[in-house]
Length: 165
Image (cartoon, rainbow, N blue to C red):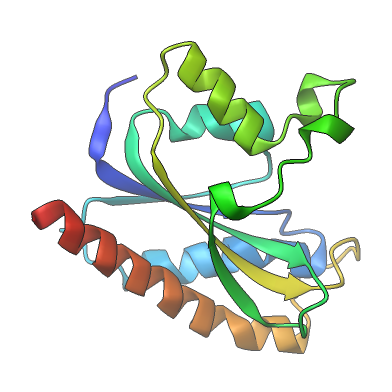
């Protein structure tokens, strides 16, 4: 794969057919609308994780992942964390490569020589309804999309400034 080390990847994660689980896609679509073509940013939407997600990150200098979080926070709350700050549940998923947490997949990829971002941020939108068959977001999650997109745009601006230094 051609290296995109100077490019940033924004990944909307989730399943757009499972109601609020599709919030990552909606935020990524909003970010894509707001991006100027001159910015060195790629935006994609994916319904996968672990090793498969890690493969999409190869060659990028920075990644911003957007996903629904099942948290005790109020529905629609937005959290911004480094991937390294999230728990790694690999001890609980040892039976299948399909269940490999992203942190473990990244460690594996690096050990095999893959060029993976050292800077991975996660923008999470707190929700409780991620298994309801629907293409629509619930009202509180729908209201959170513009703010989450703004946070992603702010992160992109910050990352672009760091690259210019």
